[in-house]
Length: 297
Ligand SMILES: Cc1cc2nc3c(=O)[nH]c(=O)nc-3n(C[C@H](O)[C@H](O)[C@H](O)COP(=O)(O)OP(=O)(O)OC[C@H]3O[C@@H](n4cnc5c(N)ncnc54)[C@H](O)[C@@H]3O)c2cc1C
Image (cartoon, rainbow, N blue to C red; front, side, top):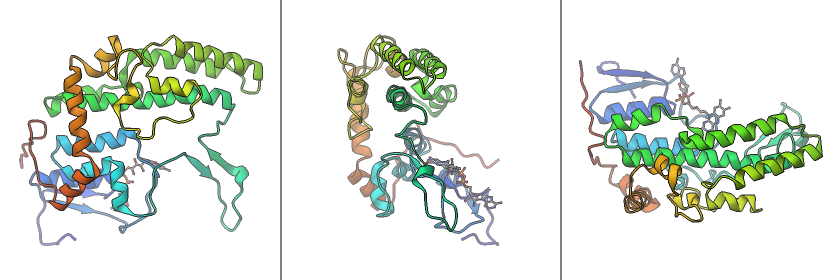
């Protein structure tokens, strides 16, 4: 609670995720911060899921600005800490509801059921997942390789997120989008032709990782633990892949360097490590990446 007689360096209006994170970062670096909030916590918040990009961004903010508490929100482990009614996301669904009337299943929309034709969705969803995973890996590897905060932001500021800025992903996505947009979803023969054409494009794309090929072969889900790099393993070249793919996502890092980074990540963000750090009050561990100078100007 703010004290009217107290003087503050910064006032933030709104205590959503942006205001609260900014407040925590500034306070960590010695500024006196006051946050004004129109509502009362705990309060209803829109949204129901945390996407990979947000999860990784929370970790990056924790690392780059030396606020380890933020990393707590980067992992599924936090679910156990915030309430028994939360769980892992299985699918997206929306239900139109009118006050005073029973819900009607006809007015629901589930992301697993395509709006147009299931066969088109079955190949398009793979592109969608591939875009999200490559984006995640690019963000992760950028953080792993950055030697300074400026270097990290210089890369992510210009990054086209879906596909992690990988040119070959964009070229593939553009071709698949063009096919999907041109097909009449009610014309079954045209849909079959489009699906065959899209599958041929995937077959001709050597960098597509094994887990996504499994989906193309008929599996209906990715491996259970979705935050692991082995998802990106290419059948012949190991999890870092090769050629342009390897250069784009891992630069000149060696397999040993990347493996070390991911091993340290899985220890640092494991349920037990996070819980221990929480118990110890998230003590600061300044590194070259997160050293900040605060000017009171
Ligand atoms: C329908 C919907 C679904 C979404 N689903 C997801 C999802 O599944 N996953 C996801 O990651 N994101 C989702 N989002 C986006 C996510 O909700 C926002 O990106 C996020 O809440 C933005 O955080 P914020 O802190 O900027 O703003 P907010 O969360 O909106 O916080 C702003 C705060 O400022 C307060 N405030 C406003 N005006 C004043 C004032 N004058 N004085 C004092 N306080 C004030 C408000 O009470 C509020 O607490 C969804 C958004 C919508 C609209």
